[in-house]
Length: 244
Image (cartoon, rainbow, N blue to C red; front, side):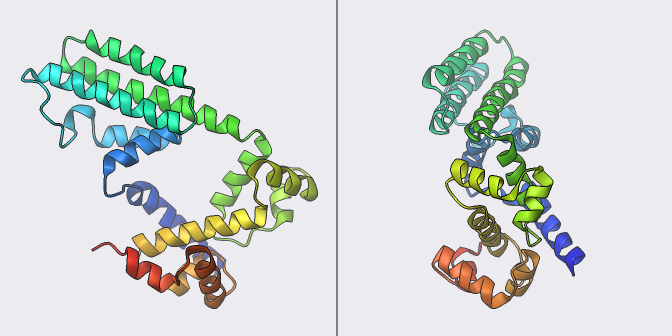
């Protein structure tokens, strides 16, 4: 059964990363991807929808080249603001924005703008990734979080985690609580329940399958913890959030 659960979980994560991250408004997803420093996802998005092929670009100028420059400037301003909300220094965020807007102003063709757009977006995303990693001061905590995410289909124990990280269990427990302001067990449960919310919204898995996939001891226990966390039962949550 453990192999089956892992396959369920891996399948969901793959589908979530390739499809379910896109919200109702794709542009918000795009800006948030940069804000959280998700460089790999951003690369995919930039390939999926190149700047010049974006749908819904308004007409801001009769000149098509100038129109793209205006939209580039709007994108730069939006990205800067999202990154500021994510913790980037004001001067750094606006400095990058000014730098790329000045560069696009010198572009003489659409191809130049097309090349500049992903360069700007990746520059912001990489800086946000570095910033977010610095915000979690300990390499041990980063490794711990990555391990938890990769193993939500299993029952994760403190002993297993500490052995993987290579530190004493009590030390890891204290360090995690100090840096994350939440216990490891609560963090794991929250991540499982957040994943369960996505599975309820975006997959056809039965509630019993979701409970088993995320290694809850029983469907009733899963329902109880989900209700405590989300304020409604899993079936009610699915009914409220199902996409028509």
